[in-house]
Length: 176
Image (tube, rainbow, N blue to C red; front, top):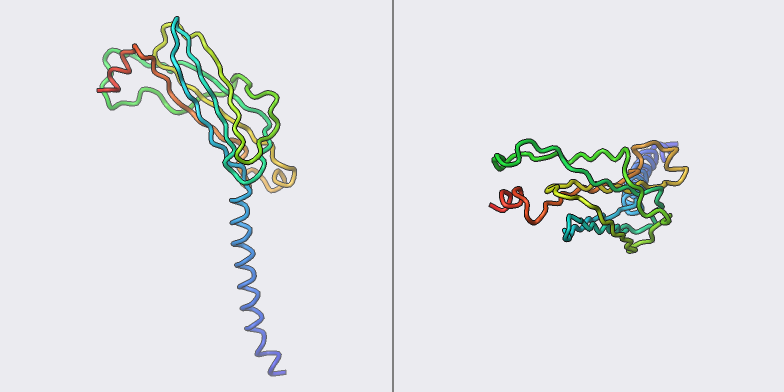
């Protein structure tokens, strides 16, 4: 009887060690098996008021990433009094409303690890000198991830960027 009582602390210690090992493994594997994308927007100003945007998405994670949809929106931020801007100042915010954004990568359903997809968009921007580009990829997670709730794994990844025309007053002020 005394030998059995003496082994309870040892069993509890084994249980605690195994529980910590399982918890660490679960957290480590959750991070390794989560989809991770690298989204980049490359801007090229063309003649006649045209803007070419190259959108690239790379799966830098270790698992296949299922994609529900990908969105892109190009908008002109509302900047008041462009001629009298005192730098440093906030010209526009990082927020892009993707409510009525353009659907891109329509035929892409998934990305395998290290796979890169890209598309080009050409916009007629006229005399606009500063544009805000927002790109968002929405993941399609398996049913068991949805059962765990929204905090179990991210459901989207977003990138924003600004494009300033080469002959803009803003570009000269930013370069100073």
